[in-house]
Image 1 (tube, rainbow, N blue to C red):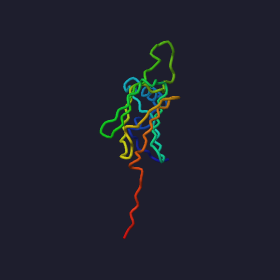
Image 2 (cartoon, one colour):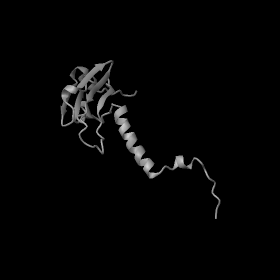
Image 3 (cartoon, helix red, strand yellow):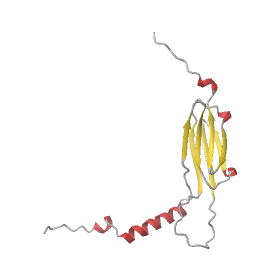
Image 4 (tube, one colour):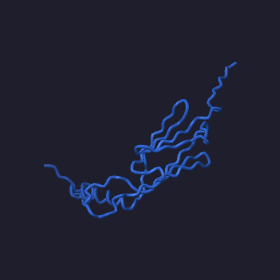
Length: 144
């Protein structure tokens, strides 16, 4: 038989299952109430003609977005409002994120800022950033 040293902090390091379960639900619920902000996921695609940004923002309308360009920065913001404000049902899981968001991206130098376009369909906000014709040409330099 081995002698094991008792650590009074052991209970803090190894919580009970009920403690973990309660903390999980308490944190999930409190995050929704205290942090009314979400960060939409973004895919960035580049091809020969343009860059494309796709933001995953289901449940919004195209009027909910504000898109601004300033100092070579593209800022996309908006707010998704919760449709579950009535307290009629018991919610056992509430994972949908609601609140305001703001994402900012640096615009590459070879983008024609005056031709940037946006569309919204099926919960995806798509922004097209066409590359400038002037900067598309590549020059090769021969080493002498």
